[in-house]
Length: 241
Image (cartoon, rainbow, N blue to C red; front, side, top):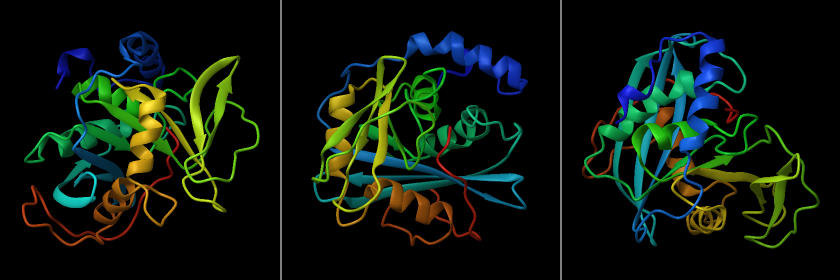
């Protein structure tokens, strides 16, 4: 992990400057090998929102069997500021990934990646910090505009901001609200969409997100080789970042 990139105990103004400085490090092309394992990360909260509960769950492709999981609790040291959620959540999420007994080939984040006002959402930050290929998979739009999304499974519409393609508005399943997929790090948008769809079964959300959310909210039982299984009272945040 790249602890030398920056400190975490910063002000919101300093955080914006860090995002602007680091966005040039995002690799928006495929820089990864064959993908046989995918991880999902999600963040919940406890103790009246003072503690972050970061979950990481690894699944095997193509059967989506759970292989490992890790759960980390850490005090929150950054205020809630829209567009700066990675400064609240990446420290715990990165620690959860570090506690896994294997390194996943790709990480799917419950939040934005490049589809961010400064092109450096949570998935980008986590990817640059850890060096892992990452994808942003958000349930809501933070920035950008798009046209009608086709209704077919796996079809998508471009998400555009000021003339720049920043993501894909993906119809994971017909008849349900789309997902907002964007590059995190070391992956192209087309490949990111394909991997997300490989993780979608009969639900709107990819299985990576579903399992990570269950663990973050205390609802997932342990797998055969967990890194840090745990249960906890429910609580979480939306996928804005």
